[in-house]
Length: 126
Image 1 (cartoon, rainbow, N blue to C red):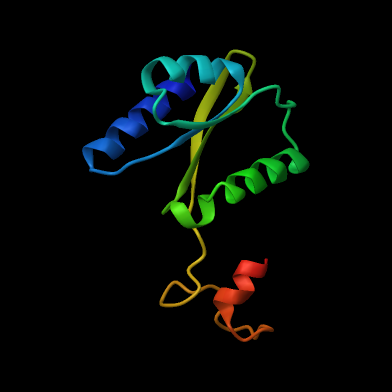
Image 2 (cartoon, rainbow, N blue to C red):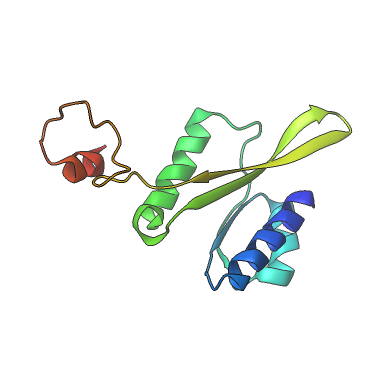
């Protein structure tokens, strides 16, 4: 419920800034809570997900989001999650992931040489 509250708060702030957002929900509890208030924003819902998560699960979820256009359609992806402190306390955290800038001042790995020489093409192939 704290995550749902955090998602509602973030969506509200984004709307106040004139930005749009889509929501991907992992798990039945979050889907039920968010569907009532923000059903129009939910684009994907994943249930029966294995817990605790592992690399193969994260990789599968990321691949599905990329296939749905997350790499080109959005300016950033925000991941909100609970972090375990003790059996009675979980802290809510979030991470913002932005796409690689393949050219310009934010270009990653400037000191390295790549094959092919075209960095945008190289990042697409990764």
